[in-house]
Image (cartoon, rainbow, N blue to C red; front, side, top):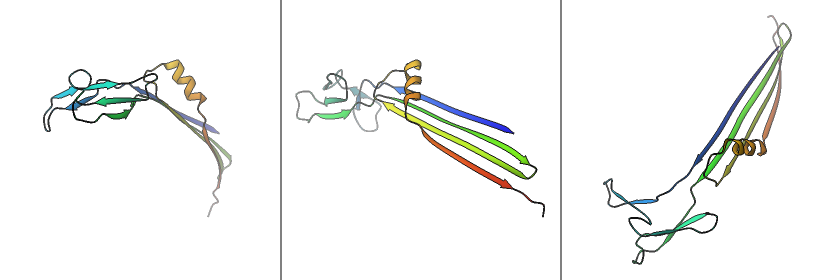
Length: 135
C-alpha cells in the first residue's frame, strides 16, 4: 500500500499606481497622470479611476477599472494504491482545486490563507482497478 499526496498553494497580490502615458512613439519618456499631465480621480472604495489626459484641454476623460488584485489558489491531490494480490491493484485518487480573486491590493498571509480555505472547492474522486494475468 502507498499513499502519495501533493499540494500546490499560490497567493499573489499586486498594487498599481502612477498610471502613465508615453510622451511619443518609440521613446522611453512618459508622463504620470495627476503629476506630469492631466488629472486622475477616484472616490470611496476604489473600483475605477477617471483620467482626464489634458486637464481642461480638449481631450475627453476616460475611465479604467481598478487593476489591483489579490489571487489565491490551491491545487492538491492524493493517490492511494493497494496491490490486493499480485497483478491486482486498486487505485483511489482525489483531486481538489479552489481559487478566489479579490480587488484588495495588499498581502496578508493569515487573511489570504483563511480566504483560500473559505473558497468553495471542486473535488474529483476516481477509482481504478487493474488486473494483470499471465499470458
